[in-house]
Image (cartoon, rainbow, N blue to C red; front, side, top):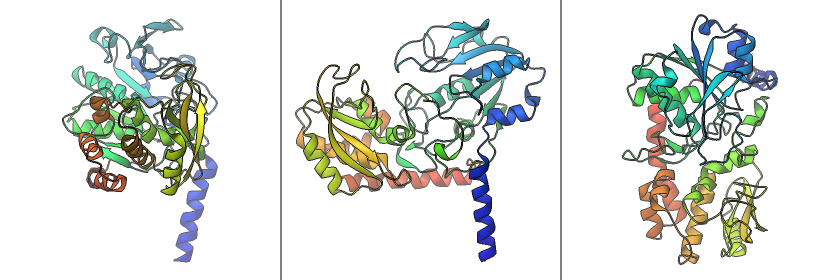
Length: 393
């Protein structure tokens, strides 16, 4: 038994030491064999790089892959455009870039007419309302209609295999609320593609280029892959981990730190009693974090130029952090103490969390009651993943 344990430990340790190879790097190792003699479109952005920092588009051009079209998601091909801003079409090295966050969010007949294969390679953050995987899902559906092969080059879920929050309500479908998964869903892009194919009964020719040396318990900093901010306001791993909870405040008039140096590691408003909130949160002894009262003046976005009384979240142990716990405890306190000033955009909150959450909040249900209620959906989701062999690593 001891020998078996040692062998497992050595094997796991070797994976961490060797470093993860993304689907793109595995494709390179295999000499692009699955792309030979095909007319290719790619769905990519600035995160579509190998361990040397080379972008997929440049790699494909250098290796004479027949690249016909480039498709870019929210934030654009270079990833430098703030969320919510419409993006125009453009070109790169004479290859057209079609924006899937502009006049359309789905590739059209004109965009797809010359393609045999679509390749998706974008680093996601592992949170349901982050839009890159919705773009993937939309493209899969359009590829299905036209019998276009769809290949996903897999990348890590940067925030590990932890699952948090309620499963999306079945009657809700939106760009930021597309998959019937928990808020923090644990899946990689390839796994989500297979989940979507199964759930939506897509008759699609789907292929996945899996990573090497990856396991689901890894956080991104353990992969040895280069970190690139996936979007302008997810600037480090801590922000990505906290985004699953703090991002839900974007359906309210609480700032999430956009326009400051610490988006999603800070939240607040000019009217918030941040010192009392910090005292309350620290008294709850939430795992993996500490809270500090901080004041910031955003230079853009909500409360631009105003003094925001907020809370800084210090991550002590990323494996223990539960961002939804932080959000639920925080909004419970804010609703109880600032009901006259807190504004909730209810449709937005239903998309980010779910409808029952709002009912529980308005009825004054305790945070732990709400968090316990989320577990039923999580367990059902986990059973579905296991039954259908969705998890690949």
